[in-house]
Image: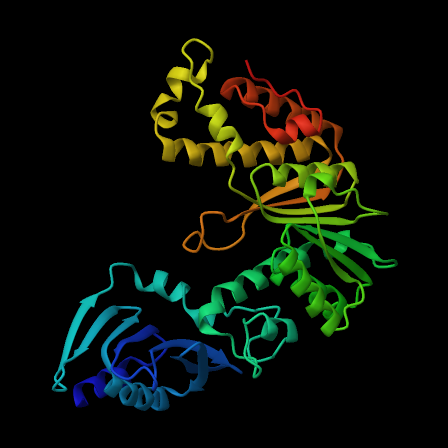
Length: 398
C-alpha cells in the first residue's frame, strides 16, 4: 500500500477534484466512500462521505488526515477512481493485496477543470444537512441526527431546488396578510410540507396551504403529520383538480406532476382565480401526442416537413411534450403572466424536469404577441390543447 499512500499524499491538494472507493468487501463497514475538496473558514479541507446502509456520514479532514483515512478504507475496497485537474487514476487492489495503478492525462484543460472545483462553487442548501427537520425525518429523508439518508439524497436536493424557486418569488407574495397557496396533486407532500416549513417557520409568513389529491390513504397520512407538527393552516383534502371550487382569495397555485390534462385544469383554475404566482411541473403529456399522430395526407402543412419526427413514436412523444409545455407557457403569457421555463432537477434523474414559473405582470403588447404565437403554432401542427379550450383559446383542429 506504500505506492497508494504516496499517490494520495501527492494529490490531496488544490488540484484534487474527487475520489470514489467502490467494490466493498464488508458492507457493514462501508458500502462506498466519496471524497471531495471543500473550503472551511478559508482553509482547504477534504470531505469524506461514507455510505453505510441507508445513511451517509461526513467528516472534513486535512490532506494528511484524508490520505491516512482513505488508505485505511482501501483495505475494505477493491477499486478507487481518483480525478485531479491534470490526471485520472484507476487504482485496483487484488484479493492478495496487490495494488495496480493506471494513470492517464485529463482531456480537458487544467483551467476548465479548476473552474468546476466543488470548493469554488460551494452549494448552499436552504434546508441544511446536519440540521434535522421534523417533517423530513418522518418522511424518511433525514435521520434524527440530521444526516440525509443516502437513498433519499436526490429527494433532498429536489426539495431544496423547489424552495429556491419559492425564494425567488417571495417579493410577489403579500407580507401584510394571510397568503393562501393551493397544491394540486400533492401526493405524499414532501414539497407541501417544505413550503410550509420554509414560509411559516423560516420566513415567518402568515400562510395557509391546501393540498389536494385523489388518494385517500395518502391524504389521511398527510393530515396526521400536519396535526403532529401543529400546522394549523396546513390542510389536505381528497378531490379532483377539475372539480375543485376553492374558497376565498388564492395567491399561489402549485401543481407538481399532475398527469396529462390535469395540469391544464390546474393552470386554468389559477388563471381564473387571478393568482399572483404559478409553479407547475407538467407530467405525461399524452393529449397532443395523439393529435400529432393523426397524419392524414393533405390535411396539414406540417405533414411532409415533420414526417421524420412524427413517424416515430418515441420522437413524437418528446415533440408532443415540448409543444404542450411551450403552448402552456404562451397561454399564460397571453393571460398576463411573465413565464420562465426552468430545469427543476437534473435530467439524469427524470426526463420530467421542466418547471413553468409564472408571475402575474400584465402587458397588452406581450399578450398580443403570445396570441399570435399560439395561433401560428396550433395552425402549423393542427393541434388543440386542453388549456386553450379551457381558457377560451382558438385551438384549431381540422
